[in-house]
Image (cartoon, rainbow, N blue to C red):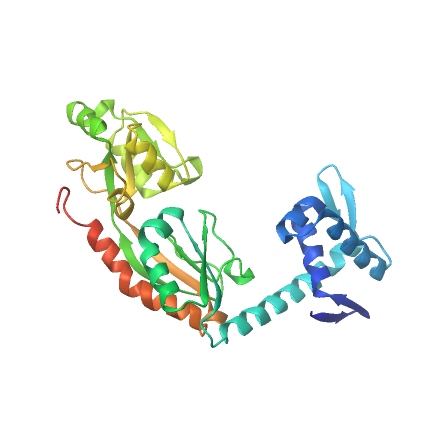
Length: 305
């Protein structure tokens, strides 16, 4: 347990974590859920801090809990303590020599399931003491806060202190069910579109699909490529999908004749403090060797054996 001395007070790091969680969520309940503790525990730890400070740190408003002037005065110190504690945690994790423990990996669900899975399987088989933990989400996790150790994603990293590199360019294709392929062949205007939701409407493949079928209407939207693929296979419409995903879903057929949808670069990133972590280096070595094979299979001509 880390003890920080500030302005004559001995403050436990666990209490600072609670304080910052309440600041960010404006709710004892939300803070408790984010920390994985009970609501009463958060309330007790806040009271301990306020007793130490001999003044309230939060006040209740219609918008939730907000900082008092006293709370606001120590916020920067709390954030500095957090940065120091997280840096120590990353440094210690980065210097572990044994290939055991958990490696937290962030990626989209389709990428983990249809591209990264062989790498994860080999990693676990070669190092039985190592437990890969995949956080499959489209949300961009904060690597500096150890929300994940390593992330695979389709946009470069803009955060400071992140080591990153472009692994590959992922090919995309246009897909539909057998019935949808017939409909599109007879009259492209009859095609219905399966798209990302409005938050991802700027994606290049979404723009390409809408411009390729300007008279078609949306049939389904989802942030999940895997869900899009399943709806596409069930005949709801056409979808642009990463080809490793589209080629492995039963009932999907790639549709040629409308040009090539734009591909996306795949980036991998991790905090610089973890660059010596053997667990991470083992995953990257395997992934860099196996991932090109996933894309090579996806580039086969439509109907090839």
